[in-house]
Image (cartoon, rainbow, N blue to C red; front, side, top):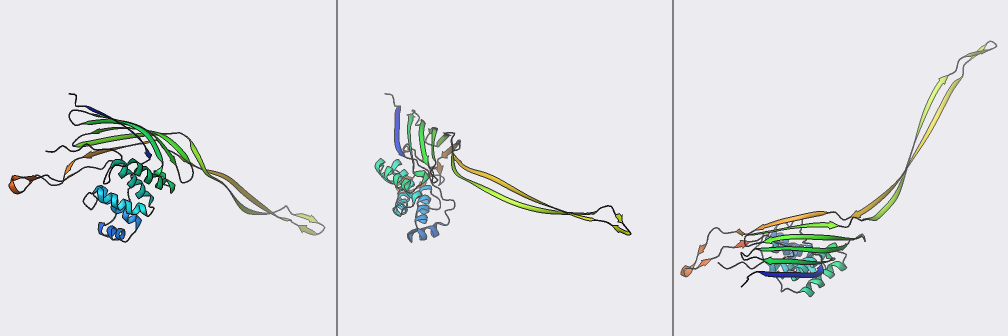
Length: 278
């Protein structure tokens, strides 16, 4: 029997952007702020649990802290909670719940909370290697009211030990005028030039005239400025490698062994094949 499997995924959801805090800070301090009800800290703590930064990686805890911040209308947490429901990370997979949270973020003008439409193809090879590709249409409305569309293309290779993914983004070439203004500056200068004319005689008196010339110059500069928004062409790539946190196996009772903890690099918006038992 042919063991190959083909999976076609079609999704209509809000555009997922994995919001990463610039500096999460000390986990104890973040936890204290989060438990005190600070939405930004609750989001940061959820992100720490999602990535295993400073704490043990725990998708369920990440989703729980995302929800606390999302319930307080923290847009980035609403986006990440929507992604958790979309991928089934820490919460049951629920497309309707994912769209609900994406829309909450979009209603706040969060640029990450817009939508995309795409199709993905994955092919499972006999060696538990998955080859995949996807094509997406993305739409964004910025906080300044500009609307942009782009085509996204992606490829991926997933295996037990190494995951690799690359994406290319080709936006429309339009520029959106967001502001224009005029400026006018004036400056003036004065120069004085003095000189004597040739002397002349009248009767028994000699005369000589002194001439003073004053030149005044006024310079006026008028400038017109325009500011634009424009989507930029770009690409991204990522590679994840399974990492054994504990070297070797730890012996336990009755000759059993405890499997070492493993950590995979997180991937946004993609499923993982279950790790085969050893």
